Length: 236
Image (tube, rainbow, N blue to C red; front, side, top):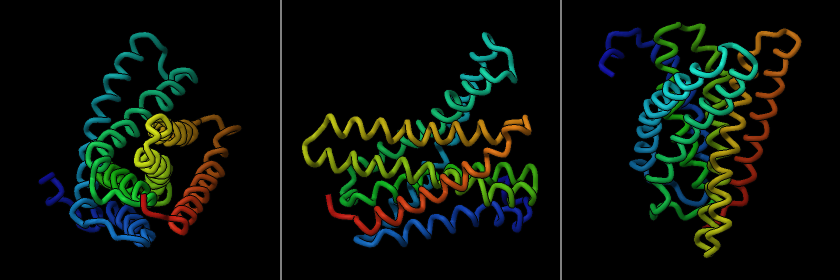
C-alpha cells in the first residue's frame, strides 16, 4: 500500500470519493441505532482484504477454464462472469461479512444487514477502484464513479437485505428460513454482478445497449430497497 504515497493525490481522491459518498449515504439511512464506527471501519478493511481472496480464486477459476474452453466465446464469457468472477467476489464478501457480524451484539436491527454488507462491498470497490484508477487515470475514475462503485453498492444492498432477513429468522428460531435467506444473500448479488459484467463486456452493438437500462434499473431498485427497509426497520 506504500506505493499510494508516490501517486497523484487528486488521482487517489477521485478513486476514493465515490465510495465514501455512498458509505455516508447508507450510514445516514440507519435511523434506529448508529453502528459502532470501529466495526464499520473493520468492515471496510476486510472488504479490501476480500479483493485479494477473490482475485486468487478468479485466477484459479480462469486457469481451469482455459484448460477446457475456448477463450472469448459466449459460453466462456458466460461461465467467467456469472460463475467465476461473480461468485468469487460476492462469495468472499459474504464470508468476511458473516464472520465479522453474524454474532456481533451490534447486529440487532434488520437494516443493519444492509449497512454491514454495503460497507464490505464498498471497501472492496474502494480498493479495486484505486488499483484501476492509478493504472488508467482520471477517465477510468469518472467511468467507474458512475457505474462500478455504485454497482458494488447495489450488490451490497441486495446482499444485506437478505442477510438482515436471515438474522431476523435466526433470532426467531427458524434456522431453515435463515439458511435460505443466507443462500439468497450470495446468489442474488452474484447473479446481478454476473449480468453487470457480462453486459458491460458485450462487443456486439445489437446487444451492448442493454447495459445502460440494466444498471439504471438496478440502481433504482437498490435505492428503493434502502429507503423502504430503512423506513420499516425494527429491532430483531
